[in-house]
Length: 120
Image 1 (cartoon, rainbow, N blue to C red):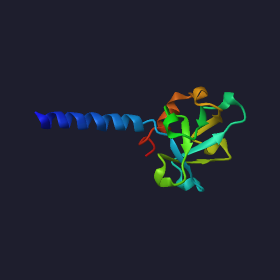
Image 2 (image 1 turned 120 degrees about the vertical axis):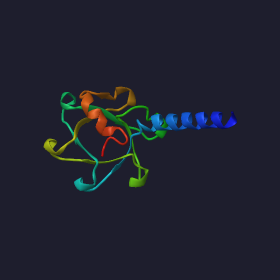
Image 3 (image 1 turned 180 degrees about the vertical axis):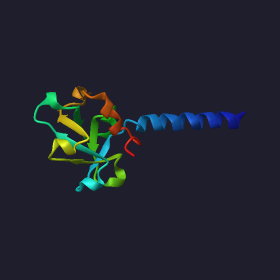
Image 4 (image 1 turned 135 degrees about the vertical axis):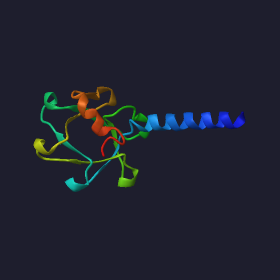
């Protein structure tokens, strides 16, 4: 009986941990396009964006895709990204907002690009 409870508890913790990480948005900015998993382009007008995103500095504030935190090494990152100069080269056109509360997806179909494991 104890072994069954232990297995159930372990499974629950594993599932919970995976679900919490599925919206993790720790990113590392790479220097070359070939090293990026996703390419962002900053639009000039919020109406042109596919995602309004926010950069935060405390990992506990990462609660959904689009709320992102830059990390110092690629090993710490969930996503390696680059900011491109041409919208034709971008995977996602973005608008930077001031607060996590303002984050929203305009083009929901692009959301899969920022989910952990959805980049490969």
